[in-house]
Length: 201
Image (cartoon, rainbow, N blue to C red; front, side):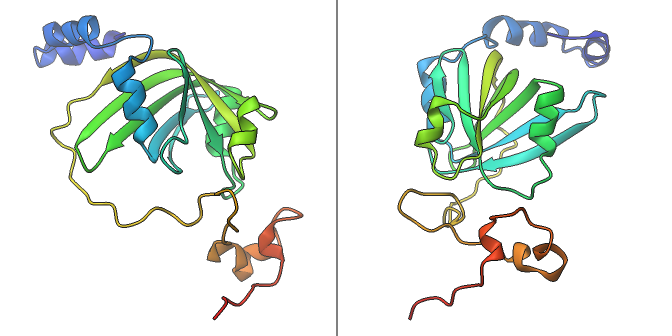
């Protein structure tokens, strides 16, 4: 689990013993029932990817609770919704499947890390269950382990995003897509190309 530079820092700060103990006791290659429930309750996570040259990026992924599915003890799946069209994270996945996912409960103060290999699926069977999804990302888990929660700041949820696609609801158009610098460059068929509708009184 550790490379030479990790080991050098562990030795500098005398943490090699505890690092090895954590790897022995807490790091696994599949999710247990408690971890699966924790993931299913989350409405957001952070996704770390890197391109073929190792240049990293980190992105926020949000949805309704349960949008990340525990398909089985070694597999997670989540939808890719409409974004800014840059496809930085998913482009990285296509070039380099190694990913890291960080799930955080900002109310209760817990977090879980998942390492794995991701793949993109345009015709995944789960597409029918994700309204508004462009594709489904599946992650084959290689490592899963909890992280110390002591530095997690506590937040209270105010509301969930109205932009998450939901069955039977019209997803609003984000303001930036109607801005002068963007509107003429959107994909064909993007709802933002339609005239803005006045809200019903």
